Amino acid sequence: MARGAGPPSRILRLLALFLLTLLAACGRGEGPDLAALVEEEEPVGRLAYEVRFEGTLDPELLAALEAASTAVQQRSRPPVDELQLARRAERDRPALVAALRGLGYYRGSVAATVETLPAPPPAEGEPGAVIEAAPRARVVFTVDPGPRYRFDRRVIEIVGPAEGFAPPPPGRLGLERDEPAIAQKVLDAETALVRAAQRVGHAFAEAAPREVVVDHDRQTMDVTLRIRPGPVLRYGPIRFDGAEGIAERYLRRLVPAREGGRFDIEELERGRTALADSGLFSVVRLVLPETPPADRELPVTFALVQRKHRTIGGGVGYLTDEGPNLRAFWEHRNVTGRGDRLRTDAHLSPVRQSAEAQLRMPEVAARGQSLLLGATLLAERLDAYDARSAKVSGGVERRLARGLVGSLGAAYRFADIEDRGERERFALLSLPGRLALDRSDNLFDPTRGGRVAVELAPYWDTLGLGTRFLKGRIVASAYWPVRNRPRLVLAGRTAVGTITGAARDSVPADERWYAGGGGSIRGIPFQKAGPIDRRGDPVGGRSVLELSTELRWSITETIGVVGFLDAGNAYPGSLPEPSAGLRFGAGLGLRYATPVGPLRLDIGVPLDKKPEVDDPFQLYLSLGQAF
Image 1 (cartoon, rainbow, N blue to C red):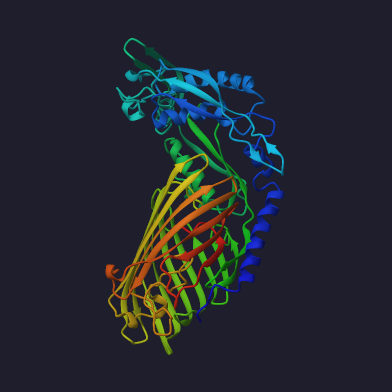
Image 2 (image 1 turned 30 degrees about the vertical axis):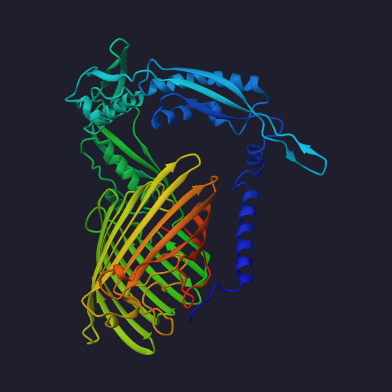
């Protein structure tokens, strides 16, 4: 069953197909503007230039100046000569001074000059011809920030009847005395002040004219924020327009606001988010009256536009160690009229075939709680084992806090496994539990934040073999934005798994831990990092350790390049063994953005190649980031 790198012609055909797809997308306007790229690299007949900021500038100030500078933003559209460039630089000065003041530098000054750069040596062209280099220039902004002013006196005043509203102190709004007098903090504090009133019933609270006094002698800023709270209101009728065919009782469970309760803007926003997350609507709009009602009961309307409730889709991929694979799914998001979601998935490849169905019943017994029912048929023909299995499962999933989800359930799986020439049957009862925290900014292509998931499940074999074991895993990933233009993201992932309570050979082969492959250690063949038998087939282990890091560079809005380094191993014992070391794989990847996530092409090579186990390289073509 060992699989090599595959015929080179087949790999080259796949690469050609992938590149042709990218070129076709560019031709439809979905990819980079190739003409613009050429113009940016070699602006024929125009004055190419660079921009430099000189002075004592910290990274925060430098970033603000670069963002405010037209000269920086328009480098891809160079002027025709130095006179036009000087005008562009001079027009930047007021914006740069405003950027200084926005960060508290109220005595700052900016001077702009244009320098002519020496031309590089002429390049040789056709025989007998010399190609003259295009002229270049440099814009130099000399910045003197001056002293940074600080907040001093901070006052909050109520205009009109208070209606019982007690404003929070300035410090809770982000205005701390002796902190830098950043203009955005004043605006944010004003927004937070209005929101604080809207959270305690003042639906029509609004900011009155603020007063900001800059004292140049003391180098301070005094701030007075004013608010008109307006009357305290309660919820009147709560309506859902455009929800035909969906049970209103289900929709009301998604919205925490209740008729007769005191107005709270955050309750309505959480309700709007829950309605959008249900997958039933393409548009969710909150509609409130323009003026306070005389009876102080505020009618609330959610204007909804329904999505089509049924979706069908699929995808194709290729992995060197698995071959081509085909995926298809069908989903119905409103089976019973209360947002119940039924999804069926099928996966087909030379080594794995599966069919799965899952029913999710939301808002069962408690708000934010869902009932999950599932069934799976699976056939695998791998180097490690051959297996056929059938599984049914049920459980409860609940949102515990923002980004935190917990689940607990039960599953029963019957498996027929051939492992190293021996055939065994298992009927496993398990009680899986999972706790997952997601604080990343994007589900499919995260650029900041992180994720942590903890999984734990006890297993019992009910066929009388006496097999019992406990299986657990922790997976954590983090994402750090290195720079914004061009976007550069550093991503890292760590996974540790363990099995205790039984010897390795007593654990069913398809429940053991393996390492290697596209979702583990790229460059190492699938499941081939870890214990290997005399025939070169993996036998799995009772523990696993995986480490991955990626540097993701977005060249354009749709095209990205990735460099990665993966490491890991599977171990016979229940804990990773340092003496066994790690296997390493590294490589490069190409990303093409699609509406459902990046299309991923990775080529990985083993850094510690084992001639009897490893291939020269591994190719992975699939949808979504590696982690």
